[in-house]
Image 1 (cartoon, helix red, strand yellow):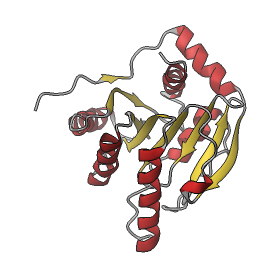
Image 2 (spheres, rainbow, N blue to C red):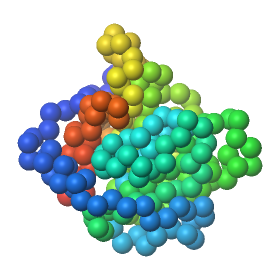
Image 3 (cartoon, rainbow, N blue to C red):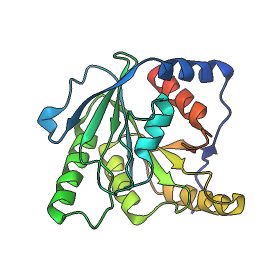
Image 4 (cartoon, helix red, strand yellow):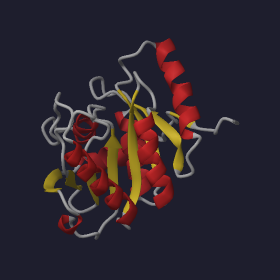
Length: 221
């Protein structure tokens, strides 16, 4: 298989980083948790969502992006986030969505199946969804359960971008090996956006770059 030409942690222009800083310096507020599609808020603005395995660090990443420690509820208990949590970014500029973590086998089977159906229907039917950010733990790389959601994004023709979380945890050599595994895994998918951002919610590494990427996306560039 020929390696897909992914760009890893691209340099951002000062203008793009400033646009990202300004976007996330504006208010970001929790609006509602959604447990069924009929509870979705109006599709009246661009939308981005964050998906990933349980405990991959979605809530921590959202808190780091917005600079609000308690905005998204982080938990050491896998499977705590059981709703699609909607946040109003920059007073109506966009919806930011924290999806339920997937891949937690110890949750009740019926509950897991309900989450999976909700996520799948949301991803395939939300016309204003501009991009899904699929979070991958930098210590472990892409797992089979990650391919399942990526397959769904391929089928729905929803563009998705990989964000490595907890990039401060592995050593440099280990991180390089994981990155090669991630690139090879992502190359199987048609809807992938060819850019990977490595982040650490603890150190703040990669956060300005991800903010800039989101601002650029919302600006249609």
